[in-house]
Image (cartoon, rainbow, N blue to C red; front, side):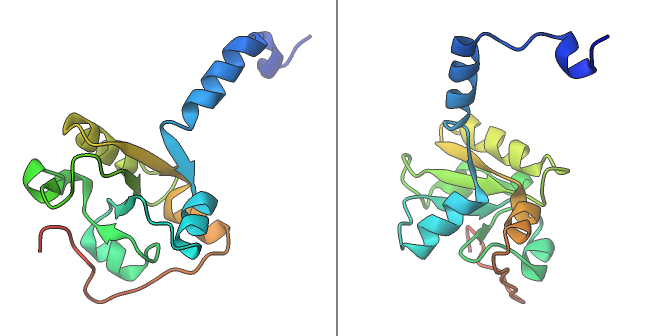
Length: 139
C-alpha cells in the first residue's frame, strides 16, 4: 500500500534540481525582501497589487500601491524598462500577484512574485505600514 505522495514517483534528481533552481528566476520570499530593505539595497520596486483601500489598511513598508488591473504601459512609463518589479497580494489564497506579474511580463518588464504575500510577511513577524493615502504609481 502506498500513499498519494509516493504513488507518483519523485522526479529524477537532475530534473528536480532544474525545477527548483529555476523557481528563483520567478519568485522571491518575504525574508529576502525584508533583508534587502533593511540593508538599504533597493534594486527593485515592490508593488502591492491589491486595491488602494487594502493597501491603506496594511502593507509592506516601502511598497507602492498599483492594483493589478491598473498596470498599464502609461503607468509604468515612470520606470526604466530594466526596472525589476516584485509583486505581492494578500497571500497564497490570492492570485492577484500572478495577475500583476502577467501584466508586467506582457509589457516586457522584469518581474518576480513575493511568495506568501502580505500573509507571509505578517507570519514572518515583520511590521506592517498603514497610510490613509497610499503612495500610488502615476500620481
